[in-house]
Image 1 (cartoon, one colour):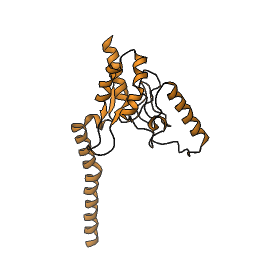
Image 2 (cartoon, rainbow, N blue to C red):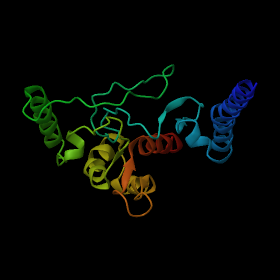
Image 3 (tube, rainbow, N blue to C red):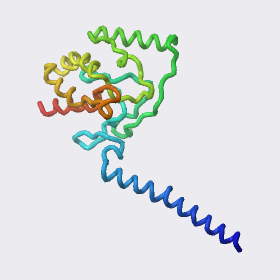
Image 4 (cartoon, rainbow, N blue to C red):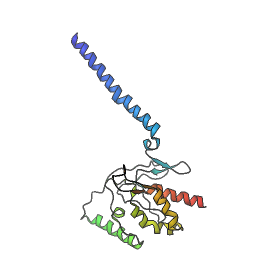
Length: 197
């Protein structure tokens, strides 16, 4: 009889712990996240004026036009388009520094930047470890400022305030370096063009 009582007690404890850890705690976190941080809890997905998803502010996007600031290169194929979700799969190419494919890509990108009178900074040539980095340094953004201003037919002084506005500071004011969110900056440039028309 004592064995059955102990088994019943153990089963109740397992059930209570399961309810707490598998149902109540996750639901509480979900509700708190949606109530306090809805933008971050839903993937930091940015939408355009037509309420269509254009990407996540936390995941780098590929921009190739001269009228846009370019982010870090990536080996990841980002989901893009109206029907695609703005996500990517994390990962690097894992190519050795002596790999001819890597060397060829670096030389090609360096020459392209030199043709555009842009100093080939490391972050504009080398991929990030995750392949998803959405930021570039303020220096890298300023290097591209002339090309973007020429392509959009505006003065550099019109774009500089946008670079400053979309520069994220250091984490907790001490960790890392300030970085410009490329997706937010490029979308602000598009909005500026729409408002100018």
